[in-house]
Length: 249
Image (cartoon, rainbow, N blue to C red; front, side, top):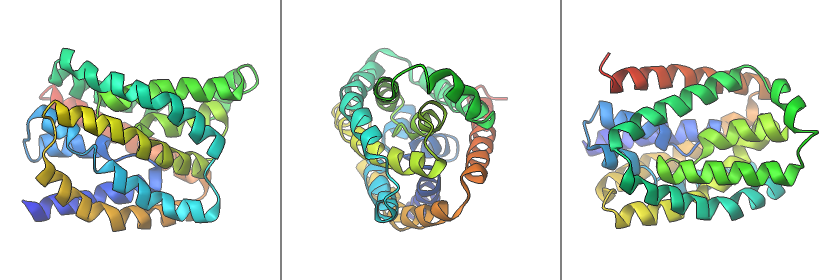
């Protein structure tokens, strides 16, 4: 079982490095559907793994100077308290609904992202100040990061591209920096609620760290448009599979 968890960690880390997502959005459905773990364990245990995943992925992007630091700062400063609020909200929400909500959020984001950034840029970029958009993104992503025990990259990457006009590589790298911070308070809250299996965390982390760095290197080599389309299709296909599994179809 430990070897299987390490293998899952390798996949999570690789996809995280390429797409700038924390990995929980991938790990949770896998741990639930394949390994049959309890809902909240499957939801929250991958969260602390996001920290080494993000740090490993950030390293390559930081060397290239791709990270958009202003966006990261504004997103993090408002996103951290929102993450805590979202994590505590799990005490009042049924875990099955959280699973379905995870799938729905992923599907909507993937579908919207596939349409291209020009549709939303024309609506937001020139009408709402950059800082206001970044702060709004941080609050929303932080809350869902805590609520769904995901890093927040599943929201951050599309929002950075669609609303702030960042390139795909800038969005991915900036997202990784943000989710490294978001994962800390979320982990502490879910740990206090008894939702984290640390043996599982350790095994996932072993696979995540080297593969996340490799994924980031490959992500920097892919053209922004191609990376955006690949990211969109990945989200759509994966979310549909996960939703159907949750409703037993």
